[in-house]
Length: 386
Image (cartoon, rainbow, N blue to C red; front, side):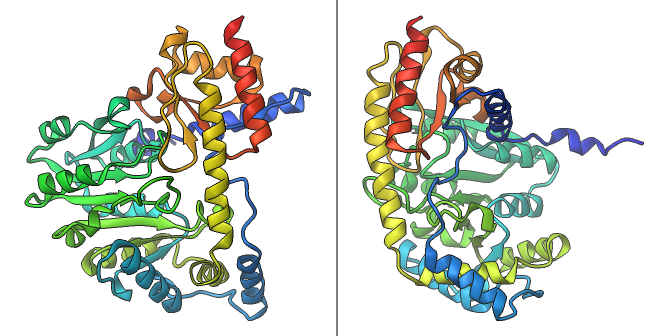
């Protein structure tokens, strides 16, 4: 017996592979500074945990509606309408277990074998994995350091073709921390508005930014009717383990996503959704404090990285990642990431974990303390000076 051939098209996430290696080294007594996992190192806000506990006591332990709890969907519709400046109805909101289903389901729903999907590279590796699994053709569009890790719009224009079925955007971005400038978002809208293209806008880091609020392409006139917004609770509320995400899209697209949802998960855990309702409608103080702390970490860590010979680190405008250029060290990305883990005691990811255009970079998650980040920079400096 053997697996279906399509299983060979799937790939994993480098962060979990590095975490496993780091844990093995720790078991041998080595001290590791963990900067590999894209997970906030903060606790879920107490009022959110309390809401989840209360929901369990109140009997929210059974099946719920496939699209999600109506009260939560209404709250999310109001939230997206106010933050993106577009009208949103409850029927446009799909609640799912985590953010990834709003990558998985739309790609399965829209991409036929041979269809092309444009996506950012370096970028979240699940984009390419799912495109290939659906039989589509992944078309990477490089993110450029000199453009603050936005697209070269001429390259994007050239890569559009009659076979293009979907464009994936991610801003603020993993792994670079880049934010697509508003003028670029409007220019991208001009490129795709008259084409038969669905835009999947991954906005999971939408509230973790350090300058101007990122512009959602759904906010540009004429784009809401062809855009799927991906957002969730994992990053801004430190709820990664609760598995709670959502998509906002035109109703006919939502119907397709809900059909895939009922065929795979039936529904999202009911008590988790009540916790999400408390998160989105309750006090936002913890979220504000978390973003402020990430800003302080960014300022310190990027400053320290830029004092290391051969390393050049642009200042990320969003998310909680640093993506330094290490070409000046003479190392390739993967060998340096491996050596920093094994010999330097710093766990990070090679830029190539996020695609071929990530060569020459490393990704550090700043989900650790100021002290740990400072020590990590010192260890990197010592290792490279040998």
